[in-house]
Length: 339
Image (cartoon, rainbow, N blue to C red; front, side):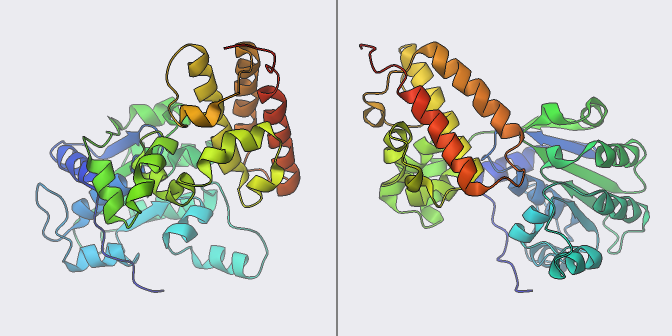
């Protein structure tokens, strides 16, 4: 496995790290809208708790412990994530899980598996390898099913030794109330002033794409970074592509990406109907689209229902056709409406 780059947190993540390190507790729940750096803040806390030379600002970034976290080999850090996300972020799977996937016995899981939770419970009972305590990081926490959540709950109730937990979620309402009650809740903070703009520039995003990307992402920097490639040319065309039923325009999009775009379009049309400015699209991109508010409300409910099953193994092409057709019907339902 190649070495991961040294962890450098964004300014708003550094600020929250300082705040949380100054408070006492053994379990934190980081919650709030997606795209604000839940994972980055959770990892920053874990690094600081395990660091050989921590400061009120966080981890030193230079000690053997920090290096071990950076290269995903720290013996006192247990990460609980869906296997798909672990592979995406460079975290190693258990030998059995990796073997099953390599031998094509199954695909990487999109949930936090009970096998991984059992390993975490066993990890919690072991002695700290480096003597600075242990950390269990759970992300996204809403990807636990009831079985894994209840297994975690038992360990949360009676943590062994110097064990800390950090759970990160964008859907705290989906967690068991008993898990939420045993954690100190922290709502993710938005970047201040031009922090997001400056950070995106440091990540190599073209200056012309920064503002459009931030608008497409609703101001969320992590999401803006992932959308920078489509912000200038593709994103402004999305409303008309939906309205004209152009399935081919979304041939490289995943179902979650399509649903996200549809949700944002529906939102902007609803707020424009109420006389407010759109949030995710420029008003010019929405020109000529005037569906009835009732149709938009019904569409919003349909999209919310579709989101519940978006990770199911549907035929991707048929899923795209269905979503685009649904959007086309709604967007053309008010052609006779006048401004």
